[in-house]
Length: 294
Image 1 (cartoon, rainbow, N blue to C red):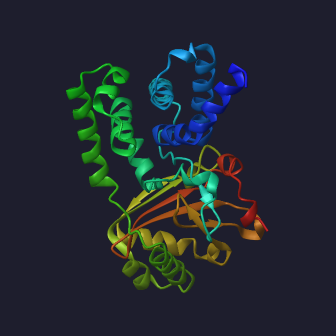
Image 2 (tube, one colour):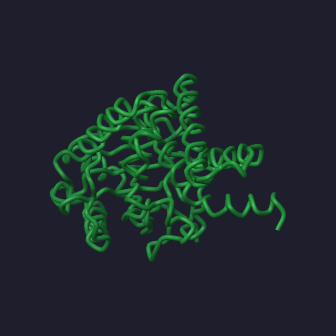
């Protein structure tokens, strides 16, 4: 095997891990792929024989690329000023595609990604690398240009934000599905009391309609308000199709076989604490939703 082939093979061994790091850093599947591709280009130009720890070297490169992308995104204000939903990873309800397993390890739900989007780039990097991938602070510090102690503080601040705003969901997927099914049953029946009963009092609904549907972008708080909003869309209930959204119970709404939204649910202690909706037609077209378009 010649050196280019050997190098490509070594890189492929780490691709899934690198994509998982980049997805958590960026919340965008397309940008994550771009970051991984940039890591390959840098590796192909490097003196590979001098790299002792290929996985660690590549993780550092991807982290630096993602950090630069986040900083550039913030400076150019690329994201809409209202609501921006991270890219969901959608699978059939009977299981996660093997290609998505590494991407979704450690319960990387939409609600968590939404909170990560609120962090400063350096905080996000420190939290993702340390808390999700156990990278030591001594290795994180030079990436963010801080001391190991300062890098630890960055991760600590981020961790507090995450714990407050994105608590861990219930692990029982079957129970999650029961709660989500009860939500849509109550919506179909126009039962406001049943809707409120299945929602946490502090539930938050976040919807991203993109530039094409700005009226569909909103953030709504509180059980009664979210329940009333759900009733206004009860006409779509017959077109709800079960799905796994970031490995949690969710749905694809597809009237006449045309997907109009992906909804992810976060269920904790048997109550829905977050509903995250992507209703942006342009971004929905980028997802593989053929299984729900029949």
